[in-house]
Image 1: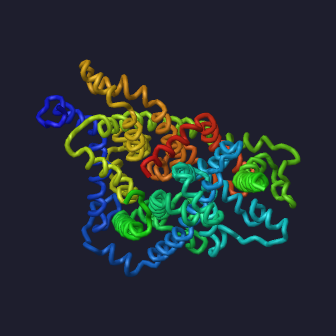
Image 2: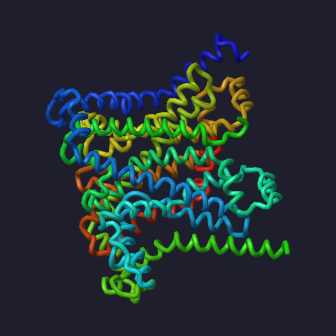
Length: 300
Length: 278
């Protein structure tokens, strides 16, 4: 009965379907589609908000790709941050998930404890870590000092500033990412591990040959997401370092923000945004190509 | 032999669990300790974990040095309105995707998910220009109104997944009784979906409470600021007074921590639900 499209009940449902989904469609048109089109137009213009956009063709793109050292610097900083951070947070969350997958007494308490740091984000996270990483009196260097090790200058050193921010984001390895991994781990049949036991394999063999392949779709999905998140790092750098020292934390989005809202070079900033979009699309597509070969999908 | 191995394994597990817990919790203890210290004990070596005398005045100073309660009111208002908009609109849209049949539905759903990939920077500037033309700069509207139009792809996704678990017979019975779709949505689906709605509310609260870029761009009037914005300004001004700065940070994160302990299971459910389909 429901298969016939001429069915009046079905037609009514279809009408209502569009009605219910309308808020999203209207929102998409006003807050996404129109802005995307305009953003591309602005990227071909010189535009400072106060005056009408002046069309200059590919001028902005030529300038940023050809003559803008800050553009390349910000690309390098963002790439470095992404390449160091993503494997560490994924691996860290995975290890923690394996650890809390043990059915020992009080495990729920530990899961809660591990989760807490991940609810601290943005400005608060930045303010806290500014103090934790203080070279003279912060937590890290105080502990190092107890062992007689002189700690680095962390955020105040151009060599350590990006590492500091990676370290900071490692605080949240017990958050949602860990829980999703945990849910995936709990779906692995225990019989698979018993096979490794019979073969005399240890902890590492189980992790390497059963755990990782079995939950590789989830790991893959989160890698893709974390790469996108890392590309968009902003608040931490804005609050803690303003991009310094020596532009070592001038991340892509920070540079874009400065161009748009400090210099009011809205056209140039729009060009930056489009380059970011293209980078994210290309990197994500590349990951899917690699993922097709590496990821194990059950039943395929 | 077997038993020994088992106890050895359990002991190692607990040892690792405790180590990880200590490492992750230590920063909190350090921060709370600093927020109660005067300068002389902040700069003492070796570091004091428990302050010699408790400087509660650090907390008092926060209230005199920044319009804390104004920011609190603004943050609460923006968060409540955003949660309201998100709950109403994302549940409506999710209902269309999960409980109604219409041409192009599944195609559009994949498209909605695809919009999550879109970096906010691509829309940021034209949206700013648009709000400027609307005369919305320096008001809370740019931070609230968009929530009423769809409520975000991730929330739609979460609610759709939950709605799909509701038995189909319920809908069919209601439809045969002549119940309108809106009534089914309002009287049957929403009450059943309370746990999922709570998850969406709590995740939206966290996002809004901690949002920085939005208030930074749209709220330039000092007294229109949110707590996150106020704290960021505070960082710039009082970076040498660590006790006061940490007290301010603790005050800003307190609501988030309290809510986490009250609604823990909803946080966890949100991630578990999103993980169902990988």
